[in-house]
Image (tube, rainbow, N blue to C red; front, side, top):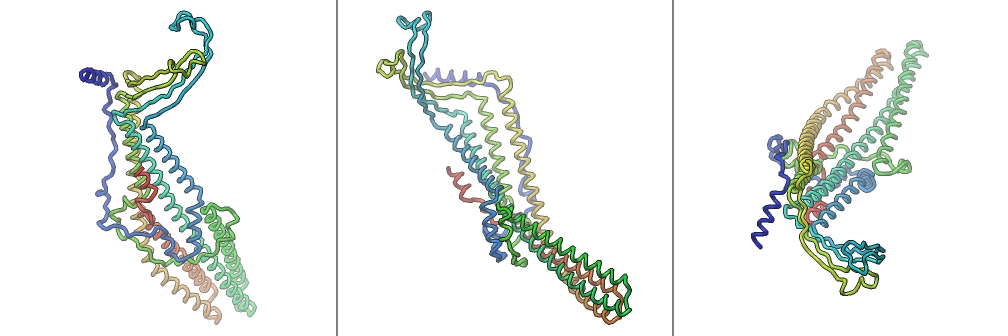
Length: 473
């Protein structure tokens, strides 16, 4: 018996299609080649936006993370991946079915049916419980299960990345809304100043100390300032619309979004060098890594197709001619044995599948490398921006203070007739530019701090409950 089994095994292996020497071409980038520092990034709370101490942004963040369609789509993909994992696991277990049928047949006279049934119409029925169990000698089903698990892990990580991206998009749009309010304040302040300039110019013209051109110039500048009021108000409304869309709401939510009270100077704990744990902190990198692992398991499953597929099958039930005989003891039947599938000749189909799986693995590795390099660049860019904007702010504040004093002096000199209108208008234009640049710099500095926080993973936990459950199932 032992010799027969050994002979059968040798025959099965020799009858298989030979596996090609297809090997992966891509190599994952080595972390030590990225120039990461020896220090880990600071830890951030999951709800990091609460550091801004603005109840409204807290409320909006909750809506974004519960009602945004993009996030709901990511969560639906998690459920789909988990369903595929459950299906793959089920395939590894014995499958039992119960099948039955009853047919009215004309039995052939010249076949295996003996008289008196041959050549007559009879009811022929059968009912059986069938067992099929894939013995998975070559690990194909185990590889398929591992691939499904890695795919489910990647889907869960995609959802975490979507949460971070949505929180970041809300923060940026919210800061833009604050900037739009400040720009509108600056425009209103400029209107008030230019109304005063027009009043002064009109008074000097009435006194014969100024010409009509100066009056028209003052009127033109006032009109432009009023245009800026309308433009900044429109931008403010557009930002409100964007925030409502992020929260998954429509126009009914516009009236509920008030002026932000965010403290833009909030100190967030941020890294000063590329953190050593960058690759383990970002969900998009971990998702890309999970897809590499899934592609590797898919290649293993494709390789197993070159070997025999051996199943254990069994049946037990009833077979009978005639309705009254179907469920009698004499009609009982049963059987069991192996079922073997040998890939002897397939015209290159299995080789093509294996080559395709290898190419998919290379593509997954290349995607991972691209994600890693993009993450390193994003983090380095954000650190540079944060540092640069912090140093620029002091100079910009000096410029704003000087522009404020210069305009006050020019306005006084114009009132007393010691200088002409041009000097005052130039000083006023410099002051306007300085105000706008200062507001934009403060907002941009906050956005870059948020970008840096998110680029090193934000409040992401590399072992969230959903992923841990997937790994344990």
